[in-house]
Every structure is written in C-alpha cells, then in structure tokens.
Image: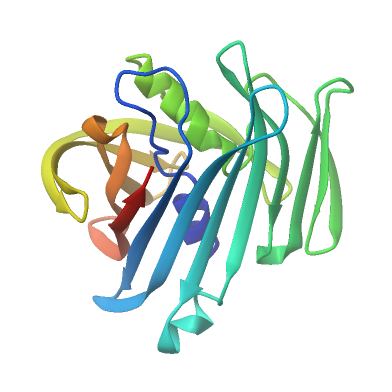
Length: 228
C-alpha cells in the first residue's frame, strides 16, 4: 500500500504544454489490482496564498474487498514553493502512518514523525518529500532534461530513487489518444519499478501507470477524468 501511495503522488503533474509554470488541475484514476477494479484515486494541484506557493493533494479510496489494501479516504498533502525555478518543499502530511514532515531550510534540518516516532535529519541540496518530487520531475522534463535520480525523505529516512526513459507509446484515455513518453522509477538494486505513460501534449500528465515486480504487473491505474 505504501508503494501505491508513493507512486501515485510521484506521477507527472500537468503543466501547460511548452510553458514553464504550473497550472492548477484535478485528475481522477481507476485502480486495478490483479485484473479487478480495486478503487479510485484523485490528484489536485492548487495555488495557495504566498510567494509562488502551491498545495498538492492526493486521495486513495478502495472498493469492496480492496478496502483492506486501499483504506477509504487515505490522503496526503505537500506544500511547496518554487524558488528560482527549483522546488522547495515546506511541509508534508499523510494519513498513512500519520506522517508529518517539516523542512527548515534556515536551520538545515528536516524534522517530523512517522507512526508517532520522531526523526531529525540534515537537509541536503535538492531534498524532496514524497509529493514534491513530482514537481521537480516536471521541471526537468519541461526543460528538456531527463533526471537520473531524486533524493527523498521517505518514512523518516532519506532514500534514493533512480529514473530512466523506457520508450514511447500511443495510449487511449478519457482525455483522448496521445503519444506518451514512458518513464520508470525504482530504488537501486530493486526488482520492482513503476512505469508512467506521460503525454507531452497534455503537459506530461500520466495516462497510465503500472507497478511491476520484474515482468509481472502488480497493479495499474488509468486516467478517467481531467479538469484544468
């Protein structure tokens, strides 16, 4: 379940094609697990009061028996700022394991708690939370660069994730049929990877997502609606 939420909030946020600035949006996805309808997910990006301040929220909701794996109304929220074209995370909260993360860039520390257990870590250049990583990915893609890695605060620990280009494919979706670029994300040395079919014409919003263990698909998500 943790990997699904992390993947969901780490998907490609839409930007206006050819633009260098974020646009608010709301998107919904259908989740399939083992070939069955397992639930739905929503993403919402909003501009909030402040100097180039943003809020990015996600919500997962299981259906039927899958409510055991996808608890109802599981939510996460990241508040971040764009400074000089770079993502600067400020706070992150998640209902899963009651996570709370605060970035104090002045003191050089990132603090918080996971399941009631506190942590205190040094910040490093480019450090992100589990949702702010998406904006960092988009900044790279919109600049014509493909990132090779990101470093995140993940459940009270600093973890490294590697990214790669896997090809391209035409995908049919609720928003239409588009050419997509395929990207993968994985921990170094892991068999498991997440693949994103992102449509440049829609500002790199993902039309399809798959979590794979080797060649086996564990679960997938497809876009069902988009409002920008």
